[in-house]
Length: 396
Ligand SMILES: [Zn+2]
Image (tube, rainbow, N blue to C red):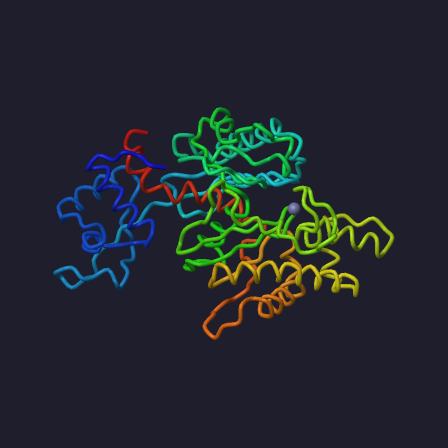
């Protein structure tokens, strides 16, 4: 979000960005980090403390420098409960809503099974109702909520409100979820594709902390990837970057919902694995049955996971050759299969990515499980918090 800042606002934003990004800092450190004068830092920090946005810490950090009396300089930090962000993950078969504090820690959450694809109006109403429940049950006021970050299992256009829904979620054609949710909740709403939100979530709070070049691959009802390169999310010209689930991997294979044939999603999604096992065992298997089957690891399950892992691995190998990430994070519903899936992915990536002596690549499971997307969606709002708080908070 770009907000015109006056000079005082710009100073406040610099201080909040420094504290938000690097954690506690002493006033002398803030002078260095922000380029502001000592007097300006002292005055703005005093204002932020009065407003309850920043507080002095009880335990100064050893790196914070010394005061003239030899004691460590007092550090200040952002008060996590000074403001909140709401997050909503709209999947094909569920809705998950959370309320997070400024540290990104969820203080409320609700997840329900929900047939999303054909019911946009009811889905968005459910999100809005859950946000209202979150506020009522936590006692957080709407004025303390900086915004609502939403992710959805559909490509989101570069404008951030339109969906490329024709083949992926046809019931949502023409729906503008961010505008509609702003109307329903009164909150500024941002909209992100689910795999992109998962990449942001794992980078902010999970397996990708501190890594600037990573690929997050989400293996759920839809398969997609979020790509962070040089610390920035790659969205492409129309929001379609990272649609790895629709790379062709099985010539002559099943027709995919995107309209092409043999996409990765037709061989490595939970639905594809459940279909395979249903035919093999001649009994109905649903995607929801898979986690338990993974735990039992019967022979057919191991083979199905190995083949799915190899198909995913080939697609990831292509992305690794093109994008040179430091880390690949595997998330989504299938990730609970653990090493039975990760091992064939790693071996196939190693086999098919361009050979080089210099690549330092790790392929790991996500740390946030089914929370990666919704925490990343809320993280979009939290990332903007320094600017939002700098401009608005005093007037809220
Ligand atoms: Zn496809």
